[in-house]
Length: 143
Image (cartoon, rainbow, N blue to C red; front, side, top):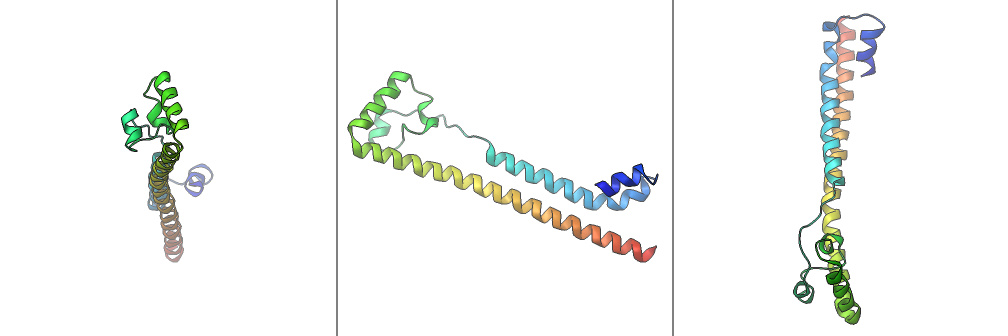
């Protein structure tokens, strides 16, 4: 990017002469854009619309400890659910286990997206450098 920009600023090159840098810059810009998109997707919060219920707690289908579940219930329902958990130690540990399991699933998705982001950026950077080396070696032989 600096080479292309300096070509316009310092040497007064015409636009046509700087077209040779279009491929490396395009590869770099597109890979950086796609990488940032995957990074944003991994950081974007996901809130479930699932409402926790007494029946769901008893059947071990949901956890009142996960904020995505308890934001959709009223304060008295939340207090009642937590009291029920405090009275039944096994249910408390089951809720903690359910919460940890779902947190692990969320983290798995986020790490997969981050891996894509890193890999795309790395490949784009390598392709950009290779194309620059090719352009410099090709233009130095023809000069």
